[in-house]
Image 1 (cartoon, rainbow, N blue to C red):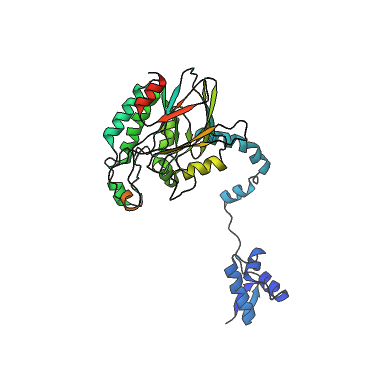
Image 2: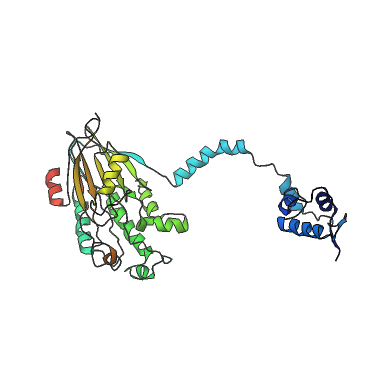
Length: 354
């Protein structure tokens, strides 16, 4: 059966029979590689004849012609505008890794690092949380830097339905709970920062493009760290370097402080303190600093934050040890470069002189 194909395609194949359908498409002779292959097949079978009138006259669109008449993308103009666009994006969603906190105090200062409160969850020790929260508010010169997982944070779309339905209140109520907690702390100038975490907005950000937890912290004018952070605490004459993250890289069956040790050795060799949340266990270790480095501390404190999620969590007891209470509080001296720490707030009050 004789089949008509465009004359330009016929002439091109006659001149070069090895042209592929893709090449015909790339030369603008075929509307697609598949169409080009079909026409080439007709040509090879000897059933193709050239047709000068194969295509009908093109119907033009006024709107599309106006778009085609617009100027092409101007790379130079974009590069000129890009820094301002980046600054605006950073203003709306600041991504911070370093900061300096000036406590403006000539007296010792304490910083609590709470982690994994899991407010709104079924397995949280709420009586213990209430006691700790009341003490946070009552102790003068005690500040709070959250290490993440403030709420249980399971959206309705989370892959584990039992985790979603196991929450004692909906996630929208959990946001309200956290908002009230942060409001109480911020109203007393005790709130220092927040940290991104799985339950603390990471899952929500992946699915929606925004982090409601981060917005709650930014509302009070405090930084929210989206990952690892390296900050300076200025207290009196002393500057303390603190490395922090909800979870550092690394794990070990033998050393629960392996992530902190790895972070100190490979990322933050001049840190005075390396602190992490996530693991639902508390732990500590003091190790000698890098003695050959003149500005390195004599000792480095490695801390692992505990949790308020200490009840019999069905997920945890299948694979992990049960959660342990223990939110470390570090007291920083303004005169000598010395830190003390405890999970007992009576110790903290004594060291602060209250």
